[in-house]
Amino acid sequence: MVTRGAFYGITVILVALLLLSSFTAVYYYSQYGQAESQNRSYVQQLQRLGVKYNSDILFDFGNGTRAWHNDTLFQPGTNMYVATQIMTGGRINDTYYPKYSEHFITAMYNVGDTGNDYWGLWIFNASVWQMSSAGADEVQVTNNSVFAWSYGLNNGTQP
Image (cartoon, rainbow, N blue to C red):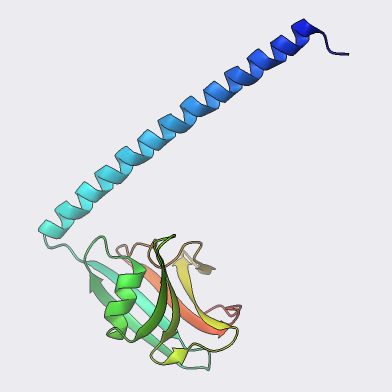
């Protein structure tokens, strides 16, 4: 049986931990907001100066056909969804999900919209391809970045 004093002691400790975790969350949230604001200001400054980011983008159609778009210039702040719209001349089909503020690309260049196959976004990091952990709307084009769109069954095929 737990004594009344032990119960109150445990309660005080739990309340203190709750307050500590709440203050920590608020602190990190405010730090994130400041960093996001600084980044937005930096991107706007780069755009005013006319700076362009150089990026390489691969389209792997899953049937052996590949198309590289090397040394493509984008404005700072461009995300991969917008970059893909530009590169394909708007020849993509997608579904927009307002809840997530994301587009799910179902077809590019009339390839897609079938069964279990879909387009997956890949990012080249140092010496290895990695599947993007975020949607195209969240992935920013940076200078000298390399991306690939790969079409295939459950997107299990690396570019």
